[in-house]
Image 1 (cartoon, rainbow over the protein chains, first blue to last red):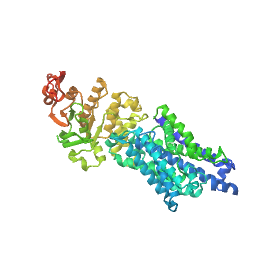
Image 2: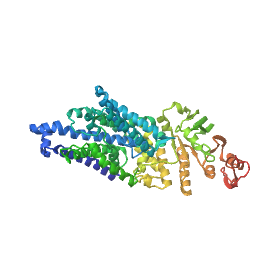
Image 3: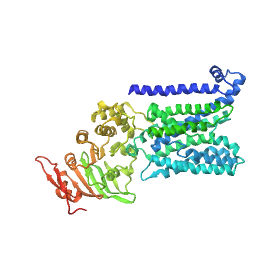
Length: 329
Length: 266
């Protein structure tokens, strides 16, 4: 057990080392390449004028934003999986992301003068969507995993339809929203990162405080009740954290699927299902996965900038099928 | 001897069907009380209602004189523990980890386990004879061992009252006796009051101070095993003809089922 715990800590530690390496490498990749030494120099304020401009104005915000969004989506998935006691729950599959997207798109296309309310609208849209899925998946005394997915499909298709409708009705304004719609981090700058970071950190802190509650939910409803947990309060809190983290991410970069599904699953394989380890591991791995996806998207087909959402869909879809085949689900 | 758990006129409904009807049950400190009755008679529902796992439509439950509805759920957990029939454990959870969750009701929102908590966890593992299994995964244990691990978790809660819903289901006869003997020793040595739902009439007879017979959600009879387990009761409640044998110097009768009673059923 002690050895096992050490191995777990080592795995988490290595993931973060890998993340830091990936951040440095990714910052160097692009139309202008930088060596790791140049990047570290620039990070400590000793870069030249050119590297400073490119790194600080373009690369650093983009790389950091990918990492932050990756963390948000991974934690959101981990929390939803705890609440629904279902390894398939993820903000994309459960409709939280598409609910938030509809709200954001409505403001972008219909009432752009209210664009400062976008994060709040996203949270409300994502929350309503989560409520709908809960209500649809609820049967007798519990939420069944299969019904969550079925309800997610239904809710997603309804919101997908609304997104299509809005896009047609406001096609003149659509080009501006198209990048966002595909889950792209292209053209994001330091200002965007500054907006995103505080929102995200609040969510991360609350998530860290939910570790014990998430763990108790693993033992099932009746045991949680027996241990004196107010089940509804725990569920509402965890769901809110999940919706919040997914919605603020959607409001910034649009829909990016599968991170919330793939990352906690990989984390579980590596460090086990104890949320004490699963949460830190999801943080490290979430940042790493989305950063790699975004870096692939912007470098493999350069000068084309493929949105990270598309990369995740292409890679994540088959991974989802693989999970189903393996029978873990 | 004072009243430890007292249910007064409890009624419980599921989906509009009244499963438990105006049931009152009085359990003294240090007693083992078994609830018996046919399938679907509302035994488990009554147990869950008494432990606030499911809401009661009417009536009240008091533990050591305090009304449950006026207590916080956490306070209740510090005095009472209920183990349900089928429990899920994550595939990678060890016995020790499972038992440590029993300390939850005694901890604040973000409080860590103290030295004292670890001592209680060790004690609970020892009491249930799980010392050599503590690093094992719960899912790798046999049914009887797993049940003992769950009882260890219950002990770590330091309850005054332990409620068990069919603790011997799915176990072979040796493990059934093992679990029931453990329950009895916890009752005798630690003074924990036990209320359990049992199916086996002979086990109820052997291990209980008092038996409560439920039929169609109503209390049919309550009393000592020798008073309750009669030929007439078994015929009326289960529709079975049985021989009831009293062995010498024992207050626990033996039941020998013979055949289904043809008349007087329902």
